[in-house]
Image (cartoon, rainbow, N blue to C red; front, side, top):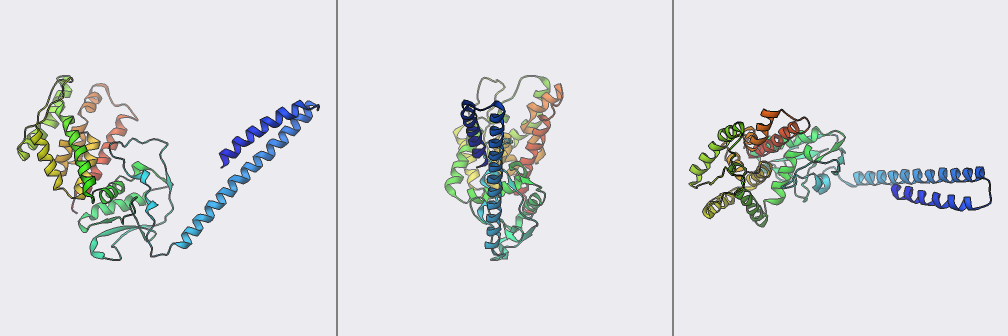
Length: 336
């Protein structure tokens, strides 16, 4: 509203200037009239902004009074813009933010059935997912629940998407993977990543990169082929894509069908972050740690850093971001 008023004011001022200057009055008189009009317009804009602020404040006050102490917060507690977006997690200054509106955060049992597990509460009101589902974690996921509490406790002035990795992952598991149709769609997308899996594209030079790939990728190939009795084809030519056996796709699809909602959400995040289905499968099956998964997915970058040094605000940001994403998935997989 204020921006519209300012635009309108500029147009009115311009029109007034032309009108006044066309009249037979002195230049000094014209300037006085224009300045007076501008001051009045600015005052109108200020009053409009203050009125809007007062209206919003009144609405928030009414909402607080209308919400009983024992009632859950509305689904908008976690805006959909703050849920980690699949296949893309770039952070820009244009992202929507939500100002902190709560004073206390705690972990509790659901009031309707304490045996269900844990709920996170903001000012004693239970948190909900963007889809409006209760954000409840089973008893074996206490570590994940504790970290969700920690994320909300550590928020300062405003929320940003990348500051709630655990919350967004838990919300994704609850909202998406209780539905078989959604689960089937995600399985199909993840298998597409296997078709161009990062760790199937070996380099023939430089030596430092070849060595890093041998150290981090060869053990993963050995494990997955032995564990699932499949053959994983790879290439050392940048101009060809290794073709995988259709039976291998079927084996991996059946494996994912056996995953619960927490494992599927974790696998999805790992695969999208690392660009490798095999790395994701190894981390879900607890064959590697989150740090090992991060190293395996960034061998090319690590080779460049070794040869040319680290680029500040680029390599270091990527280093921490990939570990934050993979570590949140590893925590969700842990039954503690």
